[in-house]
Length: 220
Ligand code: CTP
Ligand code: MG
Image (spheres, rainbow, N blue to C red):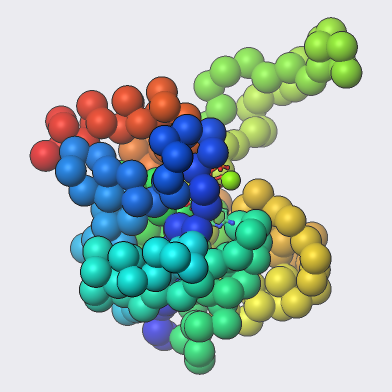
């Protein structure tokens, strides 16, 4: 079964605040986009990579990641993934992996693909939640403490049979979701979990970038 990885890299990086699309920000001299794409190929379990970028950065992305196919993303992440899905062709399995998780270790990618090969139609890598989580009301007053034992923080790559992901996106034409498995859940599909890794952290804020810089330096 052929495995295609889609890499959403068309976000603006507003919360990072560097005034350029986050995937093109560098970490120890290499862009998040290059790191994410190289990590996928280095895992040895991905046949093809498609990256989705802002329209004005298509040529720039082609120069950075020559082994990947480059297509234009959309306004919302959901639009971006939809654009990538249209480029998947007849590959049986598809991974969706944020460019914003540039340090994701190969074994996480391997575990996701292995679960798909074992028969799952949707797979997410997860970590236990370490903080105590409370629900608050509109004024910020605590309404409840949530039992964290059955909570998980979800990472990428998320893996799917192409059929399941296409069906989920087709079932929710206008949907905006924070992850792809969420659309599969909404469509009634089962989603299984595999172990994630703290190194698969998402770079969202300037603080995250500082942490990732230190980790990248150490991993060099
Ligand atoms: N993404 C995308 N297309 C969008 C929005 C997001 O491809 N329209 C991608 C980002 O490039 C990133 C991933 O989805 O790799 C996760 O999104 P997020 O962390 O929210 O990144 P940004 O949208 O770039 O950041 P912000 O929300 O702070 O602007
Ligand atoms: Mg965003």
